[in-house]
Length: 140
Image 1 (cartoon, rainbow, N blue to C red):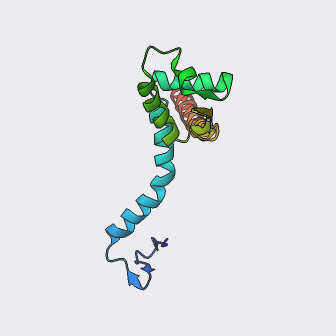
Image 2 (tube, one colour):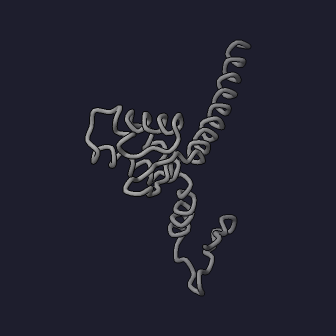
């Protein structure tokens, strides 16, 4: 991974080859910064669907469950539930293990914890800004 000299706007060499333009420096910087955002985007996209939220809640309440057990409360086929589980698995929200003939899914709380921390940071930031605006307007 390359470091970018933003202060002097100089390209940094990668394996002996310099980056050719400021745009390539900017693009490299955006790609590096977007990895964590991509994970967060995947979590929010996964829990945007009410069926997937219900599956996450079910796993939180009951622990490891098979596809059939997770499909039971929903009026949908096993392949449809499997697609929802695939989205949750790609987002890192569930893990899958094989128990005999069954796939058993378990909740992985770390991605939800990271999303909650992101929400909390932004909530605190905007609460402070709105409070400051309220104080300013009341002083006028």
